Amino acid sequence: MIEDHIDFLQKHGIQLKQHHLEKLNKFAKLILQWNRKINLTAARSIEDLIKRHLLDSLMPITIGFFREKEVIDLGSGGGFPAIPLSIYLENIRFILIEKVSKKCAFLNKVKRELSLNKIEIINKPFESLCNPIPSSLITRAVKIDRKMLDKFREKGIIWYYSFETEKPLKGLFCQYTLPGEEKIRFVVKRKTDEK
Image: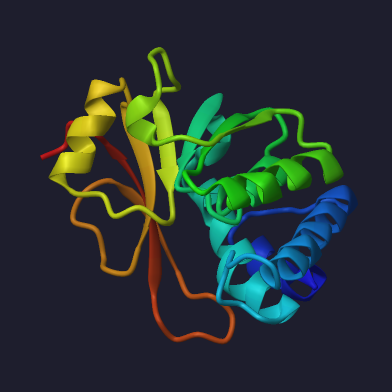
């Protein structure tokens, strides 16, 4: 359970309250239940899911994510990172963009079960969204290249957060290693107009 990793989170300045713990654990259980029907994640145990996905999803908090007001989560899949972040940061409005209808059905179930009233799930491609949309975006699943950055700028996205495995040359970033792993990870905040 996520309680087993309180030290890791506290080391990174993330203080979970009891209701956060309860919702994060319930979310993990929902993922594993639905994972039998649709492919949400490769994780097959609660421990693996918590270490590889939940803890990782909370790391943007370490670089000021808590200051955001509205954020798009592009390619939400099973809800990473938006669901863990929305559980912890209850005042941020999240727009979860997911093309796969079955995954959207799961996300809507999570929204209801966990009473996450500040999230909106959209089942269509990012390109089809109409402006105005939030000026910040986060993604764990989408590769960000020049073409994608052009799309971000077209839609009015100014800042984006991404999860990376190579040390960034630009942007504000946090470096960390998940429990039980040796690989260094990075979560990065950049402007879409950085060259």
